[in-house]
Image (tube, rainbow, N blue to C red; front, side, top):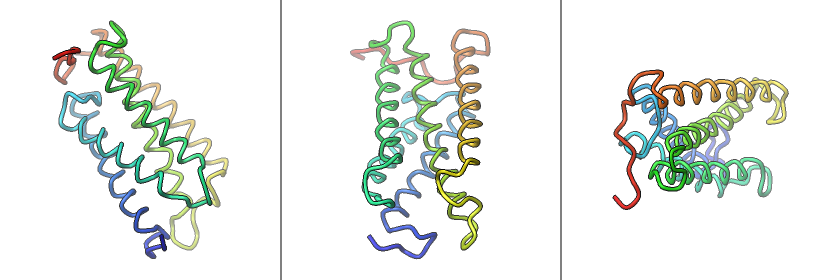
Length: 178
């Protein structure tokens, strides 16, 4: 596909970016409102489906000529989402299901931020991006900070789920067969 002229994105890239922004907004809103992302809430379902669409549209983008790190991240994200959904049903991971659900959906949320920072900082400002490429050392540092924030967020969620940080705000877990 030919670039549209807007930040050098193709038509598919523009749609992909728009869908991912909806996913990120739903994830942020779910985390602030419910303190977790789960399929038991409307925001969680919006996050899930727009993240799936983000991954699927991303598989059609070949900015660097073929399968690359962004495609691998898409596959890892889909695996994390699947783990979150299965855990949310409560059958596969037993008493650890709610923890696995929190870890998996939080990981899929983290995975949105890595390309968000990469694409933004290597494209903007137009004509003189802040970073030269996706391998810039500053991006590795940003990814490290994002990972620490992920660990803190998951720690807070697990603490809450164990009863140390207030009652869960989202509905109870769905049980297998219900």
